[in-house]
Image 1: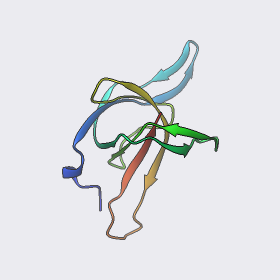
Image 2 (image 1 turned 90 degrees about the vertical axis):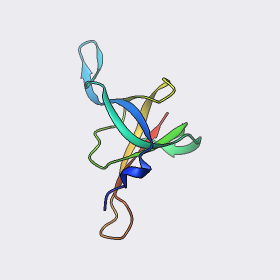
Image 3 (image 1 turned 30 degrees about the vertical axis):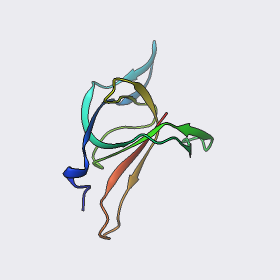
Length: 104
């Protein structure tokens, strides 16, 4: 079961991180993503295992492409960076599959 559309109340712009180029980081084209945005500060671990502060978390469809280091523009026009993106798979239980994205 996928996360229900009625929960995806917000829209953000995601520029997926593609890697390092000769002039610095490169990103994919800006893509509008429907999500649920939870602006709550908390401590999370980045891909290197270090504790960092996350200013907000967004929940989106599991098909959303949003790897760590991607740029995200929030509804209020603030720009932030993805700390980590975690796929949450219910394993057949009655909970929604979704992507949890932790933002700086």
